[in-house]
Length: 538
Image 1 (cartoon, helix red, strand yellow):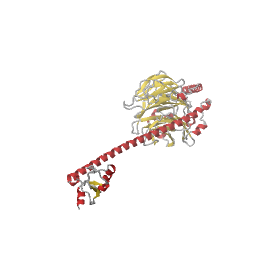
Image 2: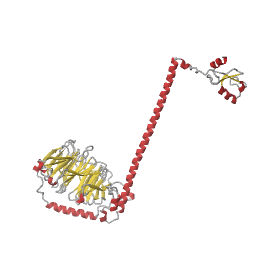
Image 3: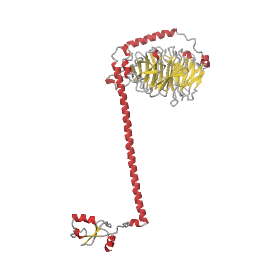
Image 4: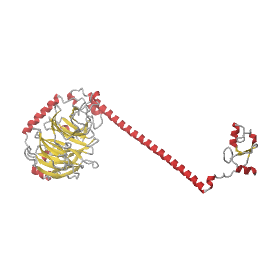
């Protein structure tokens, strides 16, 4: 009984707590924890308190009650327990904070890993694109030494080796040391003497025909134009990305070509009222479209920096024959030469390029150091030896196509020159910009009339002479028709057509054959046809 009470009341001098397996020293009578005193004796052989010599035989085991140990003093009262709870709560809060910090670090590491993965995917895509372009360039480079006549034919091997719908990128292969040069500085074949002779022959022929040509007896009269009203509205483009940016008309086939914000071009038959074909392939907005009646070609330019050459098939669909990638910025305009063998593209990269149509080869790319913000519009003169370009810095430039020399500059506009149209009479030029329309006399190289049909916040987006040169259409927040007169006579307004799209922005206006109808595009998805009710093909 004495040993039990003694063990219950004493604590070990080594550990300071009540021992679980107590022993008593015969010499000193002190109570120890068995495992602690055994370790001490193995190392020192003395009593840890008195320092006297001690052996295992001096230790006596003490029997103790195996009941619950007494609670510490802190847990013996309510304030003590509250203190314990507070300590535990503080430990939980600190542990939670540490976990939040670890979670935040893990999130940052995951975000960084995802960003690296995305960057790697972009690099891989770019490298694949450069690889494909290099392959195409090698194909074209192999054809450079062929005779000039063979250069205008698409090699069968190239058509087979490239992806469906795009048989070539149309680029002329630059020399290795010129690959990093700026646009317009790459080595080009140039406009050769054979091409120049072809351009001169076309100019001579068309100039002589113009002097003899009479205005068609079937041309719509001003009175007929006054009666024009909307005949039809056709939703040709996507409703999610509405907007028609460019338009052209194939008069002999009665087809209308539109380019839209939805990255597609649409070929529409006015006579049947049906969509003939949807041309998909561009990755961004289609800013310029042109028909080429020879061999049923279609040209499309886009803000994705490319021009595509499409050719019609017997079933009415169109196949992409070439993808031209000579420009390094948005392609703003495409215009076809009167021979229908060549065309020009103008870009925001401050260059315009002269192409052979059948091969898609860039013969010349012209860069003018004084052009600051690139080209915004372009058009060939009807005779084909003069090219007109509009720039983003409000300047109109006239070029000699054969020599690629800027022979005249027209100043006076405000804002980018949005559209250019030469009259078939050969000596009138109409240009549109933010401040309206200006008319230029090419014989005297001066502005003889200006129209400001809209307020200062409404730009003029499109201008177009009809084929006879008798009428001029202007598009901004509405469409206005003018009767063409001489330099000194007044150009009277025939009719104003309101914008029925509700967007307040007319983007394209084109005359049908003999001005029998008007095709109008705006910032919605619909192509609208205006004419006299009796002229409705339906």
